[in-house]
Length: 566
Image (cartoon, rainbow, N blue to C red):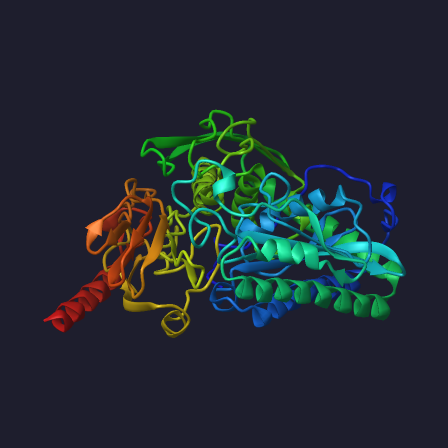
């Protein structure tokens, strides 16, 4: 985990109200059921443990380093109505958009023994590499909930190895697109569907193993939920689903009421879309009214020719993340947290695109900018809770062979923005991702790559009373002919400081020592070096107010570094 009191995992709420009783095999507890606080806490912890165990099963069973090492995956439990009741502490952008996947599956009359697979961003997905599995959970023949796993697969086809092309202009170029489809029917894997998937991806052996790990994670949820029902009884367990959601909603409403009512606005930009380098504007109006918060992205630019378009579910996920950051981190993350939150974006715009828009960069880069712009809007409402801007990018680096023999994917950490009472953290994932780095040993064992440098960028954090965190530098030598794709941000506009703090350093991408654009895909020969320098975080407060002890410590550290260089 790379979270602290302002960086938290999030979940999403489903704004559509549904009634599970009008679907076959759906069972909903009676409203108004009373559960004592002790039982509620026991049930909450057990439900969260199921989600966590799903995640561990997926990570241990996966084959690709992106899942087994970086943990680029997420798991959660939902009730029969499609409301999230528990999540593992995984990837914010995955978790916040998951309810859209369950909603999409509910349209296909799921039955016990089914497992649906999907990745279509216009039918419940986020971007094509994030493959989602949704399994009905049964008790006594009735559907009582859903297990959901989402994992970033290192390749799902498309125009470039790794399925993260910088220049895509339509979704068909980004990979295999799966609407909700039964992969398992009545307990049996449909080999025709699995074969269809594997025929359209590079390295099908790795994809097969990762898909199998997701199936195992969902199966574990069924086993553990059955044990919970046996222990507490069906009625008590189902009433607990409602109770944990109600508890979180009441807690979050109380937190929102501490924010001053008002309307808050902000704008920010993305640095081109891979087709042009023109700045792309995001605009937001946030209205706080008692225990509710409304977020409207009217004024944001129209959908793009390139692939930084983000489905509305991704925009919602970023908003819910900010809400979680500004409220008590001890509130259980579930559907109840986001019932008081509404999110809108006009159709046909950057944050609510229409097909066949390309979207692969929207999930990873645009989501980060949505986080930044909503934080900026709310800085006036909660100045002590909003940090300076972090690196604001996931620094997506993909290196793969066109013959499908390997595909390396990584998001590279950077600087965390300083807060009102402490420095930002160095070299951490910021905002909508929460992955680990791939160990050097794993990179050099699994891929024809050599890591030449991996370390902090000294003095890349913005100065202030509290300084921003430092970015990283990673240099990799590609030992075979390959294709390199970079999807990055904050190469032109630095992460901003607040309250007089200075901006963090911008990032930089180099191939064989020469600067390349923030979004680029290029074929390279063996022996080529690829360097990614990630942005630092912004500072908080006037630099002159910095504690003298901290300044002396930094001066000593810099002197030691100079001596070592000599």
